[in-house]
Picture 1: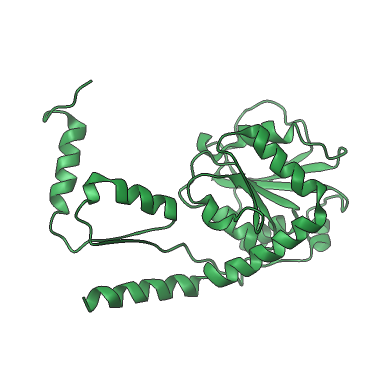
Picture 2: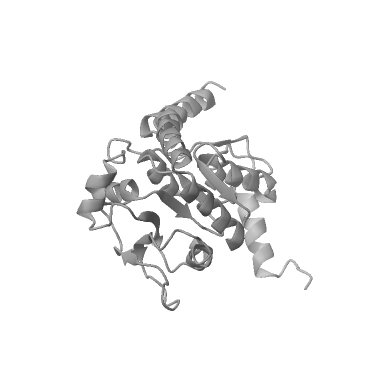
Length: 254
């Protein structure tokens, strides 16, 4: 259907473009993917600059805890292979719980697999074929850190994700992350270094990447350690604040 000047979406587009015309506008995004999307937008054709400043994290709240202690606290078998997954709203289709369960159904873990889920609105998707615990919506950083630290792998199976805060929190707790190569996830999950990336929306590939880390515990440990160091170097709240301060000073002195 051809758009016209009377089409509501066209009117909104023209209004937005008019409102920011000739403004000293600088766009900051939370991921490199979103920065690319912003640059491609015709609305932002007159923007002065684009850059990515990632969200900062309180690494004193999210830090590696003793795995055995966390498993005892959560009443988990110390010999289990623990996979965790979470989102503010687990029922949101783009968070990918269906793809995660499809991937886990193909994983071989000698019946030692346990799934930890946190977030509201667990959808009615039929029985989960592996032992699982749903914590509901978790506000406590201490409990979240315990869940991440008790886990062998955190999975972020989002079909769309502008950033991926849960992946950052997991890495800060020393847990490697497996996720789809989409949105802002690759900014944190560096394939082979802090975790593994699967082809977008491909549950079979997601399963293969999870299986790789299950089969290689030393690789899991190395990636988990790398993840914590990576967060300390690039994703602290102090680093985020300094980048904004630098940007403000640059704009003031132009």
